[in-house]
Image (tube, rainbow, N blue to C red):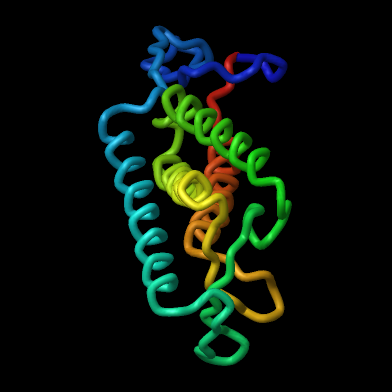
Length: 189
């Protein structure tokens, strides 16, 4: 593959080389599509994120009245608030637009994972965090029309575990992309 060609969904796996060590004797194509083990990892991370987020939100709703706060340590409070926007209070009052964009993003992530799930070992974890956090907040939007937030550091808008999972997922995805792009490639001669 020359530098101007877009990457294919198959990795170039060289099986041997000619006597000049430049030309491959045979080339095998390895699919980068997600295999069953990748799907299990993605599902485990996603479902764990959904359960953890929904459980903590249920506890907050049960234990704290809307607007009530409990000081934990330093600037950190548990504060029962509701958010109709996205992470960290952005895009308030745009619930349907946020919901539609989130559904599109989740569909895109699953589609991408179907084709590239074997690209890097962290990919199921990164997309699992992203999908789990996104779906958990979607559950709230469909059920309540808003999201329950409760982690309040006082100097930043309140958020929930789903927002943490989405943020961690984005960071892991960036690490994964950088790792894949900086992986040494065999040069064709």
